Amino acid sequence: MHHDDSWGPPPPRPPFALRLRFGLSVLFLPLWWLLLVALALAMITFAFVAEILTIIPGFEKGFERTTSRFVEWVPVWPAWCVTWPELRHEGDADYYRARAEGKVAGLTRKQLAAREAGKAPPPGPYDIPVRDYRAAGAGHVVGVARAQGWELSHDRPSDPARIVRLRRLPEAP
Image (cartoon, rainbow, N blue to C red):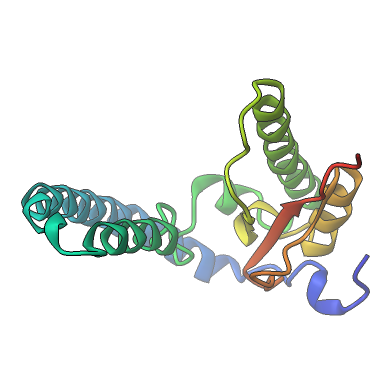
């Protein structure tokens, strides 16, 4: 377990600032999603045109890599938005503990379902954003994850103020 204070819960956000961010989220989040849909449609349109360019060596692999990076980089729920549950439960450690535990349990279920189906699980690391553990702290996520066979990712380090990145421990032979 991490004993550094940065792995503990951050201080609650001021109520006025939280309400203001929630109001701005209600206004701007639909525009954000509209922008994401427009970008997705533009990429699909470019993909149809790019079919001609597949004769260039390496173009297809580069386009796939760019598309996957875009999907990883652009969040559906950006860090600047405040959702209704976040507004209602700011500072409620029990709520955030349950939310973090549910998120880790969901990742574990997906891993086990893939193994039972004989498929390879999706490649990690798996990210748990601060909006899922805010009042419980990143250290709580790490403790719950370790109990279910996870560890912190070494490839892409976690930032406890923003995100916890997990990877599944290798199965024992």
